[in-house]
Length: 437
Image (cartoon, rainbow, N blue to C red):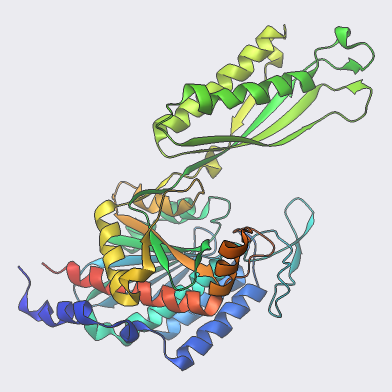
């Protein structure tokens, strides 16, 4: 039964119109300027120092208690507004090593030297600039309308999402034990295939397990004219590439979604030399832990079997390395929470603008926030980012829009941010007031 003190709060959250939680024209202009600044000053994973300082200062100015350098350049901001549940909102902060080719006047021109000594461009090609700006805008709306809710607002600016390390690092640094254990955790992610102004929600599995795997194929090199005196690793690697196609098609149940892609193969140095080694790089995608383990076991078994059939001694069997530290678990949207979020967003932007999403094989380390021992219910929704004209043109003319991670990805940022702020604010206020029994 609701306590009388919280009845007005609940009524406010249920009767709020979309305009209640939309940024004012002045606020929207400031958010647009923030977006452009973030877009023009991206930082690679593990290097998000200036970005984190900027966000930390924004949160401090709003009255949050702010802690920096959590899990690297992570930021945790808390605002206690009376008794009630704790709701966590998360945005990721890192950019990608991409040279931007959008032609926009605010395009990133940043060039840096990466950890391997390569000169690379840096771009927010995955929409993290929109994520951060939407988080700031949502925080402003929640503070502005704090009489409509009660509880603790927890904001997370997370580094190193693109390498699957940031969420792990922040949790390891005591995110849930040193600061607060949220009752709910929400996130959003831009969509490069959904028009701006629309939102999509997938209950249950939303994004996949992601594993990076290296296979080093050994052989016995020699002269290309005398292959009978060698064990050719190029041939072995080619057999492995073909054999691994049967993992998804013949080993894993056809009812279990999974992907095994060999994205890179390198070996040899000259036309007439049989090399000693070939390297393969793979990405694995799945939803369940069982399928993920099945994929890895099959890779090890198949590569070893092919080496044995070629007569190689055990010391030269292929080496299979799984980058466990970069593994990302699937993102599972708590079905009950996902429904509440969908209903709340429908109230904010209209039910006609909220659609059901299907699971995708992309990866996001947001899923880790729901897989700790605390069993926090999580939901991440897709935020449309394509201009209406570009979307309609692509439908009419049949061309493919630039995807996330494309050098030509140029979102309709103003409308996307406005929608993200409204949707996230309405969802958050609902969850605060729902928590009062």
